Amino acid sequence: MIQTIRLGKRFGKVPGIQNLSFSVPEGEVFGFVGPNGAGKSTTIRCLMGFMRPTSGQATINGRNCWAEAPLIHQRVGYIPGEVVLPENIRGLQFLRDIQRLRGVRDGSRLDALIARFGFDPDQPIRLMSKGTRQKLAIVAAFLHDPPVLILDEPTSGLDPLMQKAFVELIQEEHARGKTIFLSSHIFSEIERTCDRVAMLKSGQIVTIDVISSLRVQQQQLFEVTLAKSSDVSTLSEAGLRIRAHRGTVFTAAVHGDYPAFFKALATLPVINLQQHAQDLETSFLHFYRGDET
Amino acid sequence: MSSSLGALLRLGWRSFRPTVAAYGLGSVSYVFLLMWLYPSIAHAPGLQALLRTLPKSLVASTGLVAGLGSPLAYLTSEFYGTLYLWLLMIFTVVGIVRLIAQGPHRGSAGAWLAGPVSRPLWVLSQGGIFWGGLLITCGLVTAAEPVAMAIWEPQQVIPVGTLLLLNGMVVLVFTVLAGAVAVCAAAISDDQRALAVAALFTMIQYVLSVVGGLTAGLAWMRRLSLFYWYRPAAIVLGAQQLGFPSLVLLVMAMLLWGTAAWLFRRRDLLL
Image (cartoon, rainbow over all chains, first blue to last red; front, side):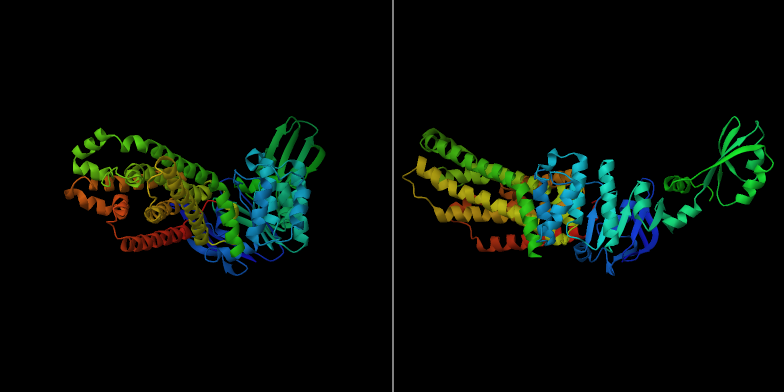
C-alpha cells in the first residue's frame, strides 16, 4: 500500500534522507522511530507529496506521492508533527469545513470521535490548549474514515488517558484493515500498536523488523550478586558489558552470547542472579547509540 | 471538486472577511471625508489660483490634471490617484501574502493542503477570495460616492458611468498587482520575506509611476510601471481608451496568476 524506493531528499548540500526503501502492505501498522533530525518528518512529507524527492520515489496505492498528491489525499488521513490550526475560527467550524472538504455528509463518525476524545470543539481554536488542538487534529484526520493513515507523533501533547484512548483507536482501525504509518517517540505506543517498526538514523534506515523479532534481538540485563567483592574483569574479557558495579552487585548486558556469559560466571562466587527484561525503548536507544549488537 | 472549492472559499473568506471590512469601510470613510471637505475647496478662489501656478509636472505627478472643477475631478486627484492607490496597495500586499504565504509557512493551511485539493486550485481559490474582497471594497466606494455627492453637492449630476469605469480599471490593475504579489507569495516559503519582497516590488511600481510622470524625459519610467495602465484623470476627462489597456491587464493577470499556481505546485511545503 505504501512504498518507497531509494527515496532521497537533499536540502542544498545537506542530505535529509537517503536511499530509503521500505514497503507497508495493506492492513499493517508500521512504526517509524528515530532521534530528532533523523528524517522522519521529511519522509512523511515526501509521502504526503508536500516535498519533492531529489531521488527515488514514494507511492501510495500505486500512485506517485508527488505527482498525484490530491488523488492520494482523498484516501489518506494525516496528522502533522506540529499541529497548527486556523486561529480565528471555532473548532467545530473547522471540523465541519474539513467534512465539506472531504465530501463527508454523515456526521455520525465526527460525533463519535468527539465523544471518544471527550472535548468541547465549539470554542475558538485560539483559546484551546495544545492537547485540545491535538485532539482536533486527530478527529480531523480520522473523520473521513480513510483507508490509509499517516501520523507524525500523533499523541504529542495528549495526557496519558487520551494517549490510551488514541492507542485503542489505532488498534480498532488496525482491526478494520486500515494501513497505518505511525511516527512516534513513545515506544510503549509503538510496541502496543505496530506490526513492524523501522528505525531511522541520520536519514537512513538502521533496521526494519517485526516487533516480536526486535524483542528477541534486544539485550538482556543480568544483575549478579557475589558472595564477596571479586575481580569481574573476566566478564569484560569475555566480551560482556558491565553496566553498573556497586560493591558485590554488578549488572551485565548480554546480547546473544549466553554461553560466554555463563562460562565467565562459573569462575565467580555467585550467590544471586536476576534477569531484567528490557523494554523496546532501551532496545532502540541501544541501536541509536551505535552499540555493538 | 466543487465541495472542496466551496470549503476552501468558505474558510479563506472567513479569515479574510475582517480585512475586507476594515479596508472597505476605511475607503468609504475617506470618500465621505473628502466630499465633506469639497465645498470649501471648490469655492476657494485662492486655492484654484495656487493650482494654476504649480508646475505642470507637479500637477501631473499628483494627479491634479483633472482639476477641482467637479466633485469627481476632485476625487480623482485626491482619492483615485493617491489615497485609494495607497489603501489598495497595502490591502493587496498584506491580503495576498496572508492568504497564500502565511498558511503554508506557519502550518495553518496544512489541513486543507492535506485534503483532496490540488495546489493550483488552492492558490486560485485564495486569489478568488482576494478578488471577492477587492470587488466588495471597490463596490462600496462606487456606491459611497453618489451618496456623498447627494449629501454635500446635491446640485451636481452623478456620473455613474465614469465612476464604474474608474473602479473597473482599479479592479483590473489591482488584480494584476495581486498576481505579482501572488508570485512572490508562492515562490518564497517564508511569509515575512514574501511580504518584504512584495512590498518592495509594489513600492518600485508606484515610484516609477510618480517619477515617470514628472517630465516627458522620464516618461519611459512610467511605462515600466503597472500603474501606467491606470490614469484616473484621463478616464474622468474621457481621454483614455479603455479597451486595449483592459485587454493588456487581463492578459497580465492571467499570466501572473498562472505563474503563481505553477510555482506553488513545484515548491516544498513544510506541513
